Image 1 (tube, helix red, strand yellow):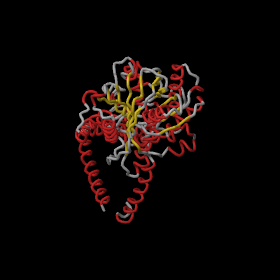
Image 2 (tube, rainbow over the protein chains, first blue to last red):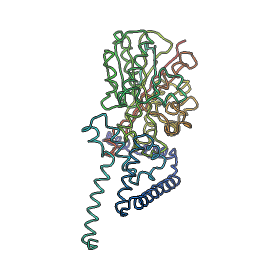
Image 3 (cartoon, one colour):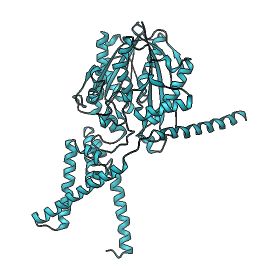
Image 4 (cartoon, chains in turn orange, purple):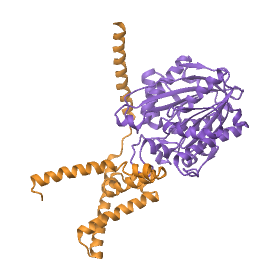
Length: 162
Length: 331
């Protein structure tokens, strides 16, 4: 009986301990510059959008193709550029600076796959690059497909498939 | 668990660093630096093995001993299954223990080695640790070329290897006493705030060491914690004051804040980390001061975060541990 009582007190003490420790930790937590991060991401993300639009305009007027085809060309171009810059070793610094400004657009997706591929090339084509290429992007693809199927169904059944 | 030693001495030591360490304030005091993170090898892991074995080479050269004269090699690192140490150990052909105490491995190794020497089981031995920024990033976080944003509390794993030669042959530095740490859980879950995780363990070990040795903070010229970083250092000072009513005062510092120039090297965020951190700082700049007699007694408190990515993803808190060893200058 006695031991049980003491163990309860001990657990109680320990819980209190954790709470007061958490207070100390919170007191020494630096404030992240969220507003500046958001503004930088907004401006850089917007710039990526502007570049994309310019590329579409360029492809439609130069190659005389439809806007839909030019959009695919634009995506391929942006993916290629971010892969190339990742391979050249400075795109990660840009991403660290611009954060979601470069992660949310297609550039972030390409960057995640390219960096994974580069990282695991020494482990070989199967156990290295093959197994790890989608290490970061795999979740995006999986839930992207699931969401696309889900919304496609809604569109088909409730909105008349338009 | 605290015990004292009679006849254990630190005879030789060597540090090998990478480019970030070279650019830091301790750069000139390192024995060897690589300007390339690959250290002329093909992979990050091989580079870590090379830096570790370089540091053992340097210690052997300083000691003018053949590797056959060394009784034991104890080494630790962060790579899966302590592989950097095992792969570095092969070429020396010395009886070998690979240990894992995360970033507390260096002092853990010194405690084990000192206990064996003081117990007269062996005459001498080398304790090594290594870490590599890129191999750790790859294992614990994201691919190295992925520019994931990090919070300000994140620390930067140091790159290189450090080794120390201990024996029962008298030198200017004596291993005086040590305290073995306990696993501590403070419900911390943020892998980007290791300082907060480990400060509690450091506090517990410092308190028990001082209590067991019946000493105060002022009995030490320097109390050096492992790799708490800027914010972990503040947390420890605050925690020691609040929990144990101990004022760490001006004799306390953290090696995580000393290895890099925190203002110029912005990529290091809150400071250095890794098993190498406290070993590199103490072997390159604290041990020479003990030898010169500028310090009389120093307490090295290495701190380690005990976790793996798997346990973090399974929403388990990150535990920590801290071991302390007290070094004395001999006049």
